[in-house]
Length: 100
Image (tube, rainbow, N blue to C red; front, side, top):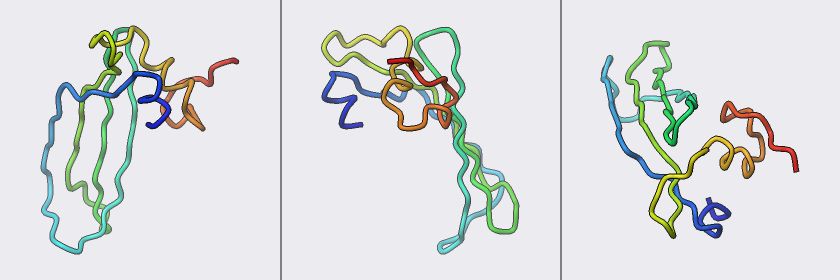
């Protein structure tokens, strides 16, 4: 994040949808997945599943985001490429590593 901000880029959340499936209580343990989905445009989707210790799906959270050029206040054309350039392991984001 520090590198993105230093280069004048910042992630923006455009939409978030939360679907509750099963109850969670204080102290419950959950495993959270994170899947990035890239399209052809300026936005991308990230989806999370919250799975209780008993294996039950408790909630799904999905959001549509973009990467904003903080100088022009416009979304960058290829957010996957920008994230991929800076990620230690771009494959975790579902993008190919950039060639230097």
